[in-house]
Image 1: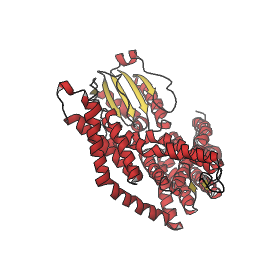
Image 2: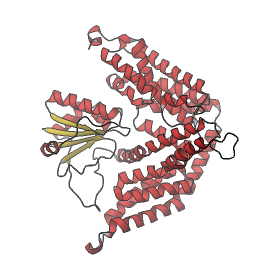
Image 3: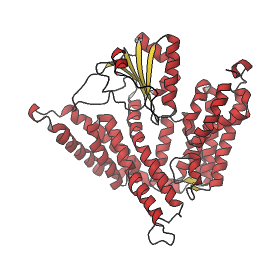
Image 4: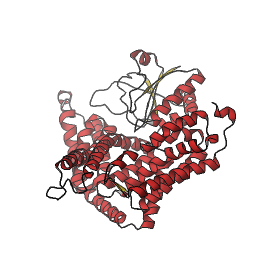
Length: 468
């Protein structure tokens, strides 16, 4: 059997390339002819050719985001999560070979019918997650670029972008206008647009973007935009499927009927049903967070840290980080600081363990540890995945404990971040991190706890294994 595959994770970093490596390794053992194209943060080392596609018996899509399938006309397609391709690679290939996983025949359709192919292996909840993470994947670059530009404006002074203030600086104002007034302001419309497009294809973009703008106007914030994306997507999908026009005027459907009806329905629901209750909920949550005492803040930080570390960049991690990013738009910056601290700890703690306790790791793991330091400092939690995959029962508890400690200390000490990403590198920008010394101590304490837990619960590697 000849299989061609595409691997892709929401961030395009670790899972994408781990899935590629695991698929190649296991396919080689089983004698399967397999070619893999990665759709990650960097250009793929191999791009599937027309010949590969023509000769393939099965197209395997191991992805947690929507993949363009237009080039796989009349091919048998199997879709699974990228995490399964990493954690159960052998079982996945066996299920394909034995026919346990039933492929779906992909066919060309008209633009009016075009919709993302459904992954039949996934539960409805998993499908919702894919739509959500597709929107987040579109939103994150706007958040990161805008957030860091805002943070740079703070380097001139907290009020340097405010006209009339004694510390006013035109460069700070320009950075704030670009980062906050433009890039960051697009966060909610882009989130809703991405979710809607994932559900209903390109025709869902209009209602999604409008719904996201109405989330801003109704002050329903991140939660409002999230709901707007799903409302717009499923409304558009229903219109595409059930509104039929005579052939003579069918061309009006994608350019007039679908956008008009979907925007009208989504907008009405946002203004009359969704906006006010979500605003009330968001205001209540904001008030609660603003009035947290140190003890309650530490408990919240502990929970944030543990959830960020548990699946190392997976659904739980992304959900918590999205929640924290949403709070940034309301002026609450402590949760995102806890997320970033906790997210840095797993790779840093493991890397530190490979340096301090070499007998616990193979030579390859120790060499990888040098790169893992860089991933940790860059707030790429996925750097811990290779170690967790090989020894999950020991590594996962260690990183969850370390990240929980980092998150708890960060929140208890009032650490805040005005940048949503960037890891240690944004700490060099003045006024971005509140209580930077406490923040560094929180990260160091979490990494040390992880390293020492690994010291005591991981078994020594034999001399033969250490040389591998």
